[in-house]
Image 1 (cartoon, rainbow, N blue to C red):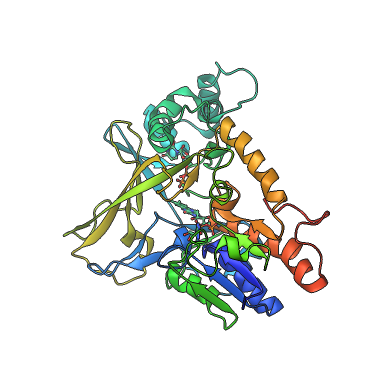
Image 2: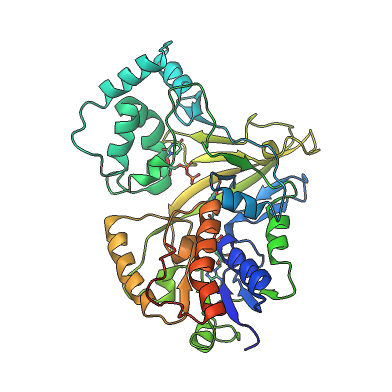
Length: 396
Ligand code: FAD
Ligand code: UDP
């Protein structure tokens, strides 16, 4: 072995660990990825026909309130002042999202004050008893039944194909509800898009003589040298692939949603006037349409063509890319059994969206990787503490 550490997966989690271990501890780090590019789901590329930067795995918007993460990422890229806004089409009418005073007044054909709008929502949520325990109850408690039926129910049915009473309340808590006309999608302190694109940022993280990234290399493929059977037990491993796959699905499959993307180049300068349009009606198959030119108004993009991408959601099979953990009660039970197995897997740490089976945004994946570095890897490599020893905090 010619490395001190193997990292499986070159997404933000893996590259943050690689950066810290190489630059701070001077370790030799080997990163492998089964895809033909670095960066995991944050990868972007220039569409050859239009010259427009396209996020291959769906639109990625960077936002955080974590100062440490913001300072950390600014070492690798500058950010544009982009602020994300989303609109949703419901029954052939366009409304601002997330739900705010503008959405409520347009929906009600009213001119409610903030207080009147609140009183109306409370009235529309009156049928709920006790604390909300799932997505449906949580959504109704936040916005009342009519807005839930219009903007959440159909979209969520398409996105998850799971009874909304089986889904975790946190999925919907991601969306703010505002009794002002502020329709920013996120409420974080810091927000922006990488000036030179995501891939330039991700490449900069990996650009160090101590970091080797090998692509088209699957950890479970025993014909390549960095495979599970040959490496585990020899050097520490940080695994950012799916935790159920690592253990050969021994306790059953964790359920994931995957996405299908359909891109189309159109001979017009502007298709929808905004970067992301959601489609709330269940009768429309896709959940949203992205138009990438709008993410970078500062760039000199052509005004006679544009590229759009329709997003469709479905359950993932083993051969699909797992994107969103469904996280039903059965999944949560299985996850606990996998975590037990993970504890006994000496010198292997599990991280990232797939490795912890969590709905992590980029800033959360980066923050969790910085914690894993601080709490486990740095103490191990500098003071010889065991990687899985007592007293070390759980990064999950
Ligand atoms: P990933 O990026 O998934 O990287 C894991 C890597 O591991 C992959 O490259 C994979 O190929 C590799 N791998 C897996 N198994 C193996 C194996 N056996 N051998 C070798 N390599 C393997 N976050 C935001 O902050 N803002 C957004 O707007 C946003 N939008 C999103 C939209 C979509 C559609 C999706 C799916 C995610 C979105 N995210 C967003 C989340 C963001 O993509 C994640 O937070 C981030 O990618 C997490 O990084 P990661 O390293 O944990 O995982
Ligand atoms: N959601 C919805 N209608 C919308 C937007 C979101 O019902 O117009 C729900 C849906 O269940 C979704 C969740 O809110 O999965 C979180 O939305 P977000 O936009 O954060 O999802 P992501 O961008 O991560 O897919």
